[in-house]
Image (cartoon, rainbow, N blue to C red; front, side, top):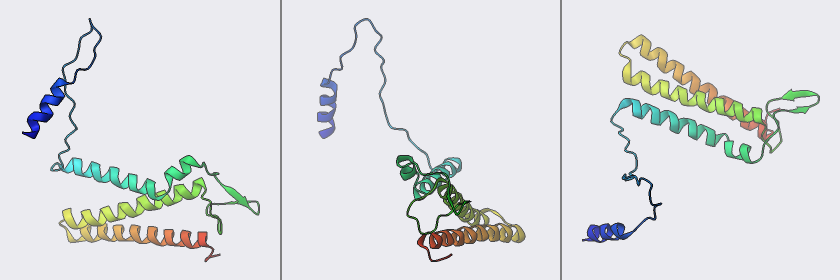
Length: 152
């Protein structure tokens, strides 16, 4: 019953049109995404991971408040500024690349268990993924400690 009422209300709406021009006859509907296809799943995973890495590195803040590329301290440029609340562009790029490295490591770890059948290749890809995740997480922790002033 409710669908008939909505349908009749929609049918009563008249959109003004310029006389003499062809009025197209089409209806808009949202796109349908089929996640049963592995290619669509991989593309969606890639898009979501890049978007989350960009959000974690503060790309919106850097777009609103354009940071300096490098700040020199004692006449030498540094990538990470200790004891400073501001973020430089180089820090954002380094942190983004470390996030992408960690995501790539997690992806390699997942794929190694899922698809490789040989024991040697599986352990190689699993070890490479673990090393990528470990290096990126330790580097991010070190950068955070430098920003807080805990490491000289």
